[in-house]
Image (cartoon, rainbow over all chains, first blue to last red; front, side):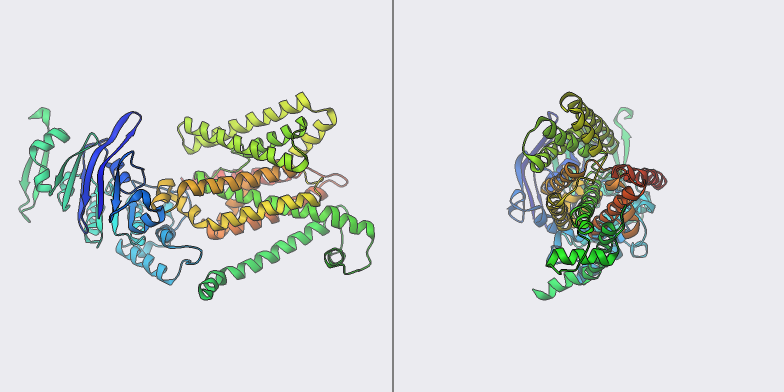
Length: 255
Length: 344
């Protein structure tokens, strides 16, 4: 549903994203992994049209993003940034209602159906009981859940998340990922934790702006590639509880 | 077509009737109170005489004061208050800084420099020339302040610091222009005007101030959702479907126009744009659908009140209105600083 054709972007004379070609399939959960500064965030911003492609183009269901208005894109793609914050005294419900923005106009004001969609989004992230709380009183995990509810209230076909589990404790990381995996939408997310990335349908590995591998996690995250891209030595283990594959990492220098 | 329109208007109508009544009461008070107070009946008679030639018998001198001086002055005060408060709301939403207002960000100072430059150098013709000069000055100073803030790293604190630098620079330029080019009489007049002064306001000024404030209000009302969407920053606004650049240009253009019009008419009046939006956030919440009309109304009422105060504070003398707003505004500003600190 979302296709990137040889897209590139530079900043300060440095290639941040370099010749990436990618095809996101409807319904899949696509993970983007890579070391710090490999271009994960920039790739997501290019894919969502928030950054204009300097080279190549992105198309959504066959239409180029540059030919669509921001409003058209926002009705189909929702983007959750890393730790977006506000000093406004918004309530949780106010923040989630912002998600309806691309669907409203002067002739179509906020109505009963919008209220229902917002309530549903709040329920999906288990924040209904906290809907009247002020933004400033929320913890990092609660804020991230509100951002996801806001994105859900956009009723997107495609949800993009930039390191959604960053700064969250392990409980909130796991509940958030479970929540995302159960959503009935296509998901593209940047992740840092490679064990969490194993749960995605497909993974793209970024290294110095280039997409160096793309495919099912088991095929993509090989010990050789982990050594080359992430500069770690990995041993894989089987969890006796469910036979799932896990990585344990060591410094290359120690091996 | 009618049903959705009704759905849009219904919740709005009750509040707008209340707002119109409050505004009318404030205007009436502004016209009747002053050094020579007039009774409400007298005010209504004069209004009726002038608006539809009702032909009540009134003292022609009193009627003249009321119709030619008090009423335009009060209307301009209302328009200026609304315009400045709206400018504050817009700037605070766009730059996401609680301290943003046209005065602090150097927009007023730039408008002052532009207006003075036109006056002392004799450019343009009369009111239009001065307003155009003020607009050019306001746009230039705001652009400089934003560029300086970007160059300094683009943070919220940098913007306020750049605004202070810009204000100082343009105030100094204004003083320089006055010293260099103005004669003694011009200089006194300009200094008095710069402190904020409604004494010289006549009917032609109303025809600039009221459309400027009204137009600004309409633009802001059309973009209330966009201003809401800026709460989490520009890229969040873009991901919510806001055409960020277009909205920024429309809103900053409206703000600069309103500020320039107001400064060219009544000089630089501080703190209205800062204190009124914060007070209204406290009363009606941070959502712009309510904040924009509430701030416009409160700004108008506040400046009418400040104008009345400036006329009756010292018998026989008019205190510059900028002095009155600063006397109220500075403590209000202190309260905002303290409240913000507590929130962090």
